[in-house]
Image (cartoon, rainbow, N blue to C red; front, side):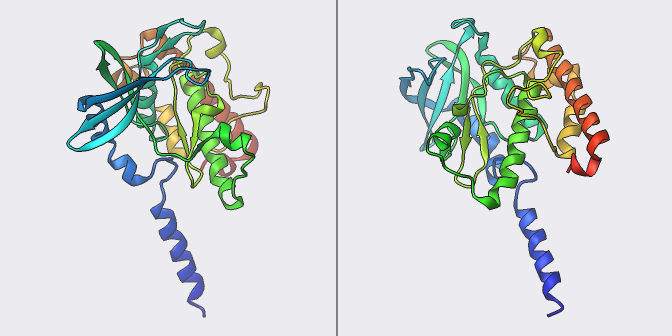
Length: 274
């Protein structure tokens, strides 16, 4: 009987090791990411359908891609400029994915540049998921009690990410929820804002009207954010962001670090960083 606590603790350790540290995609999905990037870039387009309607603001195309006997859906868009009053760019979709990879966040599906109908655009692999957050809210589906803690932590990760990339378009259709309540983030064509509103104050900060704020964060993620500088960002997203956009990210980085410094000073590091 005395061995039971040791066995129990060993089982907990094994369970923890079998789960991603704070990524939302599972380890096997992350390991296959280069394969899907190559697939998106080089697969043949064997089907196409343009999405329209209130839930398809940027009018993207659903592409059916095929390569080596594998067929997948992907979302392609080449929006650019201010077609509906907002700054929109397909380049931001790829930049957001590159940030997601650099940070080790692993919440954004593989997204690459791909030509379609003679035009450059972003091409994102369709993610396997259960429901959008909007449908979950509309159907009044409650998160299981044993999933509430990790689910809330994943929401805090989303807020940190959107604060960093200056994303002003995180509505409920842009959260994809898996059956085990992991969160996948899509649609970043309205990110990387550069105005004063987006470089002097955090959207998910103390002044958020709905009190949606950043809370605890993995130490590894905060260190990754701190490591960002102009040259680092230029190295992985320079093809898709200009200098003004990069400098705006760095301004938000400083705001995020300052906010976590305040939280640690107030609540203690053990209650903020994990």
